[in-house]
Length: 253
Image (cartoon, rainbow, N blue to C red):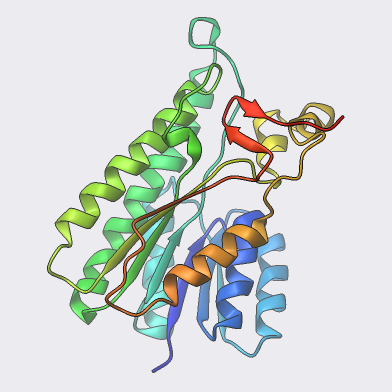
C-alpha cells in the first residue's frame, strides 16, 4: 500500500530535508509552508525521486489555512500515514523584563505550539479512523533546558513536550505512534530568523563548531518511521558532539 507523509514548514531546513528523506523511502508527500516559491522547488526535487507531491501554501497559525491543507490532502490521497509537525521559529533574544514587543512572543506561541496542536487535532482523527499513523513533532533541547533570552521559545518547546506526552497517552490502545525529536544546535535559517536577518549574529552561533545539519534530523525521522509498527521511539534528544548543553559549546576558534 502506498503511504502518504504530510510535512509542515517544508520549504527549507529540516522540513525540506525530511521531505526528500521520506521521498527516498517511497512516501508520497503533502508539503506545506508560507513561502510557495521555495516550496515549489522542494516539490520538484522530491518528484525527481519518483513520488507524487502535493505542495500547498500553509500558515499553521490560521485555522482556515490548516483546514484547507488537510482537506486538499485527503481529496488527493485519501489518507495520511505520517504527520511531521516541523513548522516553527524563534524570534529575538530579548529578556522578559526588557521585552516591549509582545508580537514576537505571540508569533512563537501561535506557530510552535498552537499551530502544532491545530495540525495534530485535524489529522489524528483521520489516523484513528484508518487505524494507523505516526505523528512526529519537532521539539528542541530548549524544551528540556531553558536559557536567558529564550523564555517564550523555550516555553513553546516545553509545551510541545507536554502536548506530545499527553497525545501519546491519549492514543494508548491505538496503533498510532507518537515521537518527539528534540535537536540542539542545527544550522538552518533558524538563527537568521531569530536575529531578524542579521547574518553576522546568525553566523556567530555556529562559529568554531560542527553543528547538526537538517539532513541529520531527517535521518532520524526516516529511522523513526521505518521501525516495525509495534516499535515507538518516544523522544530522541540529539546534539552535535561539540555541544553538551544549551550553554556549553566547545568552539575551536
